[in-house]
Length: 171
Image (cartoon, rainbow, N blue to C red; front, side):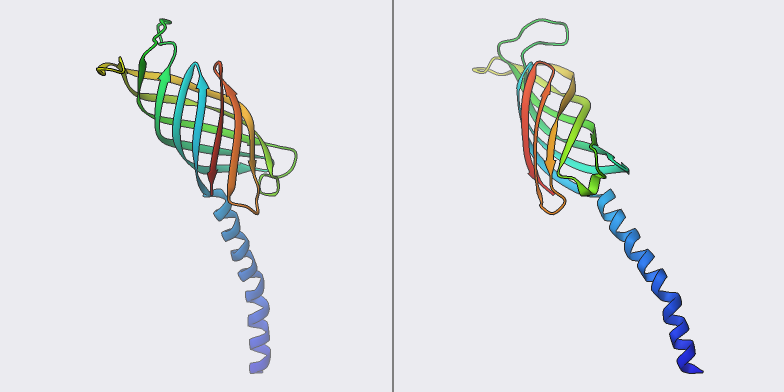
């Protein structure tokens, strides 16, 4: 009788343990975090550190939030005037949608569309920097991201508002 109860207990626990293991794996992918170093040249040139987190996965698409410090050099201000010597520190935040033909966690290459803002300070004149104003600039890009499920390396190439850029990083 004891032997039968032990066998029945294990038969009941095996599906429960398997389901718990699968749930943990999916949660690890969902909350996955990575860090990238971003370089962009164009209408708003920047160097940024991005701290990314996977927010949602729906089959072949994923939504990622990116946040971090940046140092930008806008060539054109929000009112349309051209600055030769404007630059300054910023905080950037953006959301990206990654898509492809196979499920997110199984593919290496993703099409990425991203949008967000830079918020920071602008200084004028490199020789004697003086504070000019706070700025808010849009951030938008279309590109391709290589992020293998079996590797920790992330590379990204993209185009934005009259700009091109690339990122390198790891999970």
